[in-house]
Image 1 (cartoon, rainbow, N blue to C red):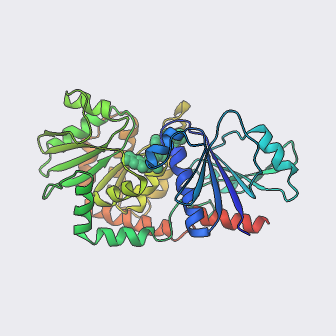
Image 2: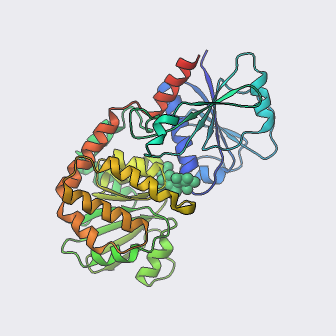
Length: 377
Ligand code: TRH
């Protein structure tokens, strides 16, 4: 019999919580043949990622995953063989009690946030004994062999390479989302939180010799964009030009389409967790807007990632990259660091592909979870 898996997702904010769990659930079904229930407390966020889904459905099957509405009033269900609480969300008390009552106890995992910090390897896979006698294991995604790895579908890189090798596929895709690529222009995607550094980036792009086409999916950065451009209420499809910079607002598209957008662009500004990882699989230079935390804890995470990512770049290319990423995340101007980055452009491109290939040589997160379960049995 197929092992059953329950994944619990509480949407704290934005799309990362549901983005990661939806991607994981689909992969466990598609590549490992598992029976997966995804419990989501905010179906509205889920519908943004999966528009064909029902926003009020208590129960629905989407791409082989049973998607269940996790309501405040919990209806008893038989716990699964493997229970994942994503990002330390709190499981319903009676569900935990039912887990403890099962003859064959379930494997209970807390899927943690992604971090490149050193301590992750030491904590990955550790159990924590709970008051009901069950152990809960901490599962840390990460960039190194001693971590739980990154979400990556089996054929992702082959698909990406085929797409990038086929200019007509790119053209067709871009047109399908309303974008007409400008000949000779650098294509950039921008997915970010509110960011005071944006104005300086727009300035330097507008004044550049080479034209840039900036594609901005609907979201939190739009207000800053409008303020910088001095216009009100930019809507999907709107295009603005400023010097050499052409800006277009895109709709929020499905995850698979968003991958294609990242693969189509020469440079991707991404944020949070899942889009950050997907930009790495795109094999193109990127800029990360990290999710802000209290006491600037996020800046340590940023540095930890840079320490890993900069390996293999020349000294000048490292400085350019680090300056740009730090400035973008501390609301400083990016004019100079962007220009420095352009000076090392071919190297940054090669490095992005090398980094992607190195990460892809590690076990992906879904496979690592399945292996963890098999070893635990
Ligand atoms: O949306 P995010 O900022 O999400 C998160 C959450 O804020 C979370 O609480 C926080 O802890 C975490 O970041 C670090 O960024 P993220 O993680 O990149 O998630 C966005 C998802 O939306 C990702 O799965 C990609 C998807 N997406 C689309 O499917 N279509 C789109 O057009 C865009 C722009 C994104």
